[in-house]
Image: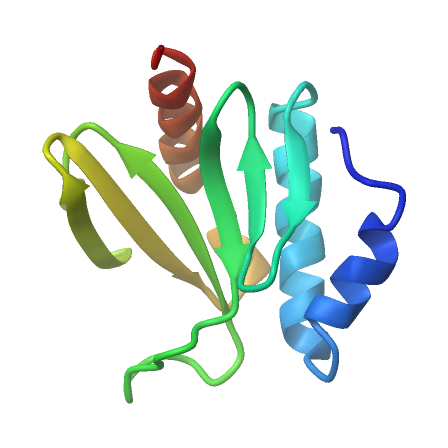
Amino acid sequence: MKTSEHYESDILFFFDGKPAELALYQAFFRRMEAAFPDASARVQKSQVSFYGKHFFAAASLPLRRRKDWPRECILVTFGLPIRLDSPRIAVAVEPYPSRWTHHVLISDEGQLDGELMGWIQSSWDFSESKR
């Protein structure tokens, strides 16, 4: 996966003071790197974004946390042309017609499973099909 020369230090800064979240992100990045070796990852102000030709996924720290959410978690975000119906989806919004943004809470490495990675693969396919 392509990253900037400052990627490692940027990640450490992004997750500063949040070692559990950093560990979850690192596990997520390993899965992403294996599944999408031609993608790139960019550390931004509010999230780490993953791109092919277009944006297809992100990892972030929850900013507005609901009371029932785990204390230590990351939020994985991806877009699809349909709304997924799964209890794993914490939030789904349709910012544009037929473009659904889904957010999944990850509080344990076991949640980085085939189902999640399948959804992200579908997001990759959807984003790569855009003009």
